[in-house]
Length: 561
Ligand code: GLC
Ligand code: CA
Image 1 (cartoon, protein in one colour):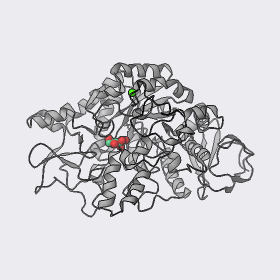
Image 2 (image 1 turned 180 degrees about the vertical axis):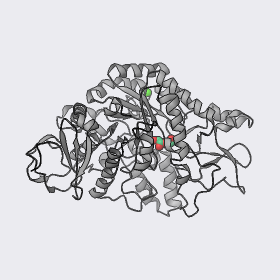
Image 3 (image 1 turned 45 degrees about the vertical axis):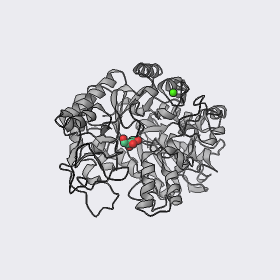
Image 4 (image 1 turned 30 degrees about the vertical axis):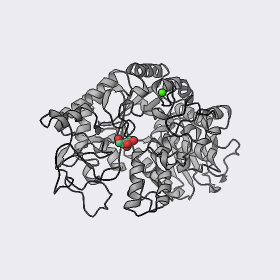
């Protein structure tokens, strides 16, 4: 179903690094409240708030130990009520993060299950006997190593697909599902605008948990045994009937290893499951088939590769009537300007160009905190690493892939989730305006020049361009629901597509390359440039030369002869 909220623009907040209000060096809810005017001014309509529930923080909030309370470091339930209300007053909705595939091993359900083998909470999780004094099967966890962790009983294990401290919930158990629906209703009743659902396409596991195909490489996880199983749809249909259909809101799912077809089955307009999905094909560009730390393609890619992934998803989404959230960076991936653009020589035009692609694509645009000022990755020293996945894969790269430590380190520094979690750069002060004390995590020294305050004062800044793009997106229905058609598909540098509705027709042209690009513009009667990421530009003519990363929204008037 098409919902008006899907026409909005979402801003993702990773609270720990966003803004500290009480000088303990940790971002918090009051910090977010103090920046709501900034967000309102940016023009966004929705915030996706990464988890703020009580958590031992092994996976920074994705290991929840109490779904009904706020992590004390971040504030209290009344701070949360205030955030919801203050956001609402500014026309902004808050999406919570629903982490429902697993809980922390500190969650009372799991603690009860450990304490008493007769407890009903045993069946909330997936306990299993070991086989031949080893794990019950050969599944590999998503952060490396076995997917099983020893329980407190001899020869007994529990399924932990992420860190060993995140225990997978048993969605087969109807009581577990009811508990999750209860959590959702609790927050919806508090006035949140919906949920982003963490790894929602792996909640079902193949019955009996058979071994994965032994021909799959050692560290390949059991993708065919957990991803998008038919049961995951049964559960989501039930969730739709019990919660989503009764609580108007926006519901989006994180899809692991999804393809257009599987996304269509979750967020198809007639599906009665979710409103939209995320895919990760763009952020995994240049990676080998095993994902982020599969370095065998050396993370090299060409504009053509970006184009074909982009077109594939956009065309499918439009033609097959399913809806996607579009993004190029988030808390699990590096900064978009470092990953896709040129963070040194062409930081400004390339950051702007890629934000333009997100903001003009078919689907709902997402921007991640700091992306609006072109924050970059940072070579984080090994002693500062926090990301469990990166630390675990660092070991794996050396032990299983036999890489020397200095190369493994380079790969980790490029791909670690820590890149996205450095402190938000508000100003050029000693702690970047984030806090008055030393923040909990590293701050990129480039905050002296890359920061919000600077961008607010510079008319040509990435921030001001992002604002213009958001305003344009909000003012032009064609960018919300208009059709999508790719064009110039074989051009080696330019990403080009047409969005059209009854009101108007727009041609988006983005040079994905650090070199000049020449092309012949279609011969429309008139081609009016509406927005360009360079401050000076000539008119659109038949023979065009685009500068490095030049990007334009062009209004097409009249028919081709
Ligand atoms: C999702 C989250 C990630 C987390 C994982 C396990 O991928 O985005 O941050 O580590 O799920 O919850
Ligand atoms: Ca704080």
